[in-house]
Amino acid sequence: MSASPTFKKAIYEQLARIGKAIASPPRLELLDLLCQGPRTVEHLAKEAGLTVANCSQHLRVLHRARLVEAEKNGLYVTYRLADLVVCEFFRGLRVLGEQRLAEIELLLRQFREEPEMLEPVQMKGLLRRIRRGEITVLDVRPTEEYDAGHIPGAVSLPLKDLKSHLSRLPRDQEIVAYCRGPFCVLAKEAIQVLRAKGFDARRMECGIPDWRAEGLPLETGTGQGYIRAAIRRRG
Amino acid sequence: MSASPTFKKAIYEQLARIGKAIASPPRLELLDLLCQGPRTVEHLAKEAGLTVANCSQHLRVLHRARLVEAEKNGLYVTYRLADLVVCEFFRGLRVLGEQRLAEIELLLRQFREEPEMLEPVQMKGLLRRIRRGEITVLDVRPTEEYDAGHIPGAVSLPLKDLKSHLSRLPRDQEIVAYCRGPFCVLAKEAIQVLRAKGFDARRMECGIPDWRAEGLPLETGTGQGYIRAAIRRRG
DNA sequence: TTAATATTCAACTATACGATTGAATACTTT
DNA sequence: AAAGTATTCAATCGTATAGTTGAATATTAA
Image (cartoon, rainbow over all chains, first blue to last red):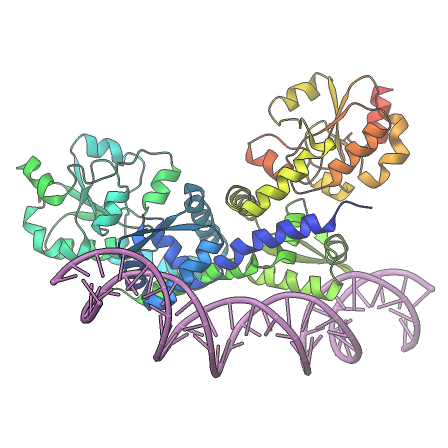
């Protein structure tokens, strides 16, 4: 009599599909990367340190859980998040982990104690300081991720290109570097390089998903944000 | 050289602990139940249709992922969510599933097409109508869940007690019943009984987690909310 | 102390999943 | 058409997990 136990069962089975999809470390890393923007299988595999075949399989699992979508463009397959809510959900998972798992808290605490991480810059007020031209904000992620969405006024300077473009950075104002988020080491390494060369550089911990979650505006595309253009402006 | 791949690996491994915890249908059901309030192992097992041993093991997994906490009171062990963020996270999962999984959408659409589910009541404005005394809101969940948190002014009348208390319900105003949330059938069955007896009854789809997510106020404890007291007031 | 009850533990089996490998497919370029 | 590249598929093996059963533990009641 009491209404279909199969209904409830079916619902939880479906939800468990999502749970299973995020029950594997490499898949979480892939999701985290895809939160930064669409990428090809090859790139994701390289970034996550997986074989292409393995990466492809994990992406397939994410696809079956309808968390990501694939689109074939010529020879390459580009994966992207199926929906912005997936990014929000992933962020929710991250926040839950940071808050509940002592192991993550410990790792983060150690990470934050490293010299480059001290006195991080907050999201709040950053936009105003950018608009006033008081600071230079560097997006040190790969350009594809910058193009997919970045902080308005930030300049794209991928970590791997940093050393060869140091001369173009201002020495008379603070430089703020950000990357994928609190777990990402790109900005940390950028700060390390910059400080070694005498720049006044600090890290902002948050990434684009956090920025978006705060309801702050984003800019997409190349815009004027590449380092060459930015330097031309600064002339 | 490039900063510890073990750091990133460790982080995703930790997050996957949470993923693994929610990768099983019965565990999701247990979490959903615990979002309604603390319960004993025995009760959870009964409600979720599990053997006690099996239930206990699943709770242990949730505990290891630090999503729930256990407290022994005399002979009984009471489990509760470790933190409100767990409830929020579970709700995020639910919303993601509703939005992304066609299978869930289909199940919900069918569910909503049943006669008792048509024209559901919205959260918005409900509180005002309660305060004005325009409607009677019934919380048809078990009393323990009602006590753990309910809509202010709602009256506790568990589904299993509904039939024996029909005479105490008003026939001159609308009755709104709610239960655990969109996947729960308690309110649906309550509406079915009420309408069969000629009451003007409708369902509110949302549960307490949704109500809380809207930032709306909650009431805890028994208060004046039990059906006997409520009827006395209405006398 | 003994009996009863709630919960957990330990052992077991069937099943599912992860990563690897090598082959197959699909598309582009020559 | 043929060669080259990106991606996926299929088969494999070792490991992990789910649920069952029966015993062990801890607390209360008699």
